[in-house]
Length: 342
Image (tube, rainbow, N blue to C red; front, side, top):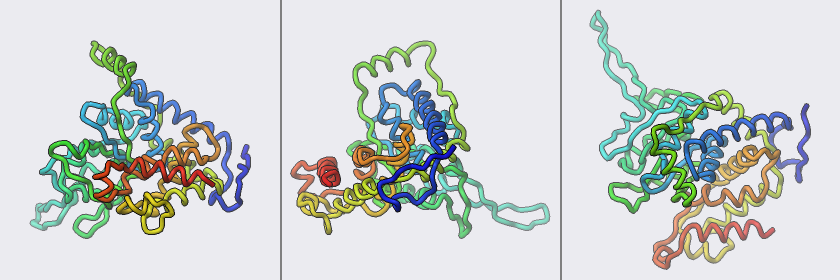
């Protein structure tokens, strides 16, 4: 039975009406997936939620945290729980683009004829774990640009389509640590969300100590399939969005650009701000968060909650602002206050 979703503006949604039963069914599936992940990853509920939002929105995620916070294990667990074909690439300073994308080799037939044959690299999977992505050179990091945006790669002038769905979940150590390179801005912009992983609280760390150092440990279990995930991603794009949410997204993103921002602190302290891809990311992520929580439409609160993970890697402060102790989070707080002041 289909039910029309009431909107606060007739043009706020570009999709047809959705069924409440479909939302409830998919929300239950995703909730079970989140629970399955939390059975293995302790004390990181917000991180798990943001990872699932990223995948539901059809995007890529950048997980940042110091070593030892189970970033790699989290990505591996997500691959198992979601039923995706996952592969892992350990990024190192000597890693080459061909080690990720694949390369052509010369074959010689029995009659002496020669031809080139393409050997697929690890990028040909449904979930690619780019482990410690900022330990590779910028040249190698940029090898993922086309794959992340177009879901295909070009080698020797020929295009090769990637499997569907395709997601990159990259882990990164803080750039202040030894042996790391900053990611190119063009690549950062292709990550739907930057997911910061902090230290667990005392109760969660107690669980980690007790449950992971014994004879047995929790193993991830599959809850969804790739087909289920693609159906959920399709449903995310059908969720209607009210005019107030659209306005909040536009006010938030456009106010973050120093050339046109009405906020003095942005004009003074921001070197460059978020582009239209940030608006798209906020729209999809807000819809995905609503679906994850079993709601039929996103709210302005969804936009404000997701502002930091969506915007923080798409903005840069001036040198003087950094010297004065300003942070991107401070600027985003001001953007949220401005966007919410309607």
